[in-house]
Length: 624
Image (cartoon, rainbow, N blue to C red):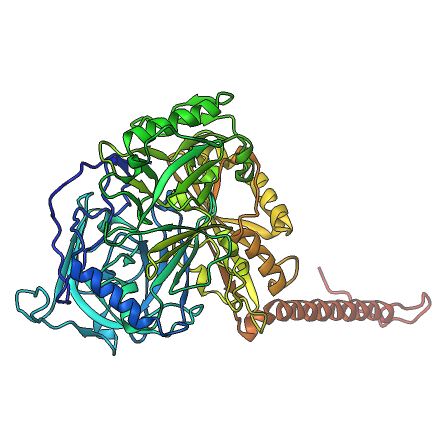
């Protein structure tokens, strides 16, 4: 896990172009210390002005008479530690064009690569084609925005701390949120990229969906239209599971949800009122003001790990290590970093609480958020049963930055209308059932290719030809190859199918890891897999209920896909029967011909027999 050190910049180095007369602060993540290449960190920061704060309050008063709003329930895909981000699917235009966008509470603009892009990378989906959308309209140049050279269209630009950037034009089109959403498609302004550099160029995801505070934020635009309440929620999947769920709009908070105040005036970021951290029930010996330095304690979905001020990090590290004296401390997976890692722990995530101490975060209102080991640990990629601290020192920056690892398997409600953020520990793969929301499919771990969500498993007339799935294994393929039959047998047992049904389709080796493609075919002479069997297989894959022997290392489900039974022509379906019938006819015909031939020979031999005393005609002897 490569992490680059990023120095704190105190000057504004991003150019923000918006179409409103009162530009809002574009929120982002600023940190010292180590980051992942896929993490998007804007360099700029400006304090919110008084007029902006007043406009927010006024908007809430205006919307308060609306008793209820629809919301957009959306799935999250990918994995924070494996991919460096979570993505969701967004459909833009008429007809809709699909995009996989990184969920980022630190960004305020949603943008996708444009078909006219002069320097864009090779991403997951095709670039946006404005000419193919009958509802697309460019945002024309006006006094309230920055314009292109021809002064024809509004433009935007974003520059980020890891030296990546995005720039392009602003357009408006219909945005759809998927078939699980109660919210109807809405018109919204977004960025159509013409140039992208750095990690934005090389990442697999198409672009970013900005959920921060700002006029171009998707949330702000939907709230201004009055179609959703001023709230949204994120639920990140747990360790080894990934995926999750996102809700744009309000939901009823669970009774035991833990809330903390979030001050939009103090910082443009989503901050929380953290006061104390407990390890194994003991508070860290720190002044509560340590968590209130600079930007305070910031919650950012675009950051992978957590970063504490120096004093808080040292106290946390010492407290953790004093509770783990029975474990062996080992070197981290990357020799370039001094990760704090321990071996000898169980491989099952559900058993980590028996070894690692509980951690609690106490807020200013006295409420506490319990953190499980998966909320501050990540797996060692080279040693089985080893884990490393996912909390680091934030250089010399006094800001406390809490990334996605802190809120794995936690529903986080960003209640912007009431200036508070709520936390509720749950299994994000069963979120809708636990919230008692009917008519919604369970959020499941997803494909980085986005094929999972498009498959309909309704038991109508669908005949499934095969189920394919890709796996990532933390084991070298040269070591894995001799044991492929054992792995196939293990997978078959976990999926409750015959070993003969599990086939290896393809494999790829990358360093010390392996990527393997599998397929499950119908059993025996069956022509297709029944819907009940397919649902059972998919649920076991999606809910991470497939357990393989420890000798194969850790595994990660990358994607699964259901392929319908291939329709064949009459000749393809009856080819064997026709060949068999012709063969039988030929055999029967040859048999009859042989029998007749034998009978005829016998008859000829009987006719040529003469008695001994029979008179024979004389034959004249010819001269020699």
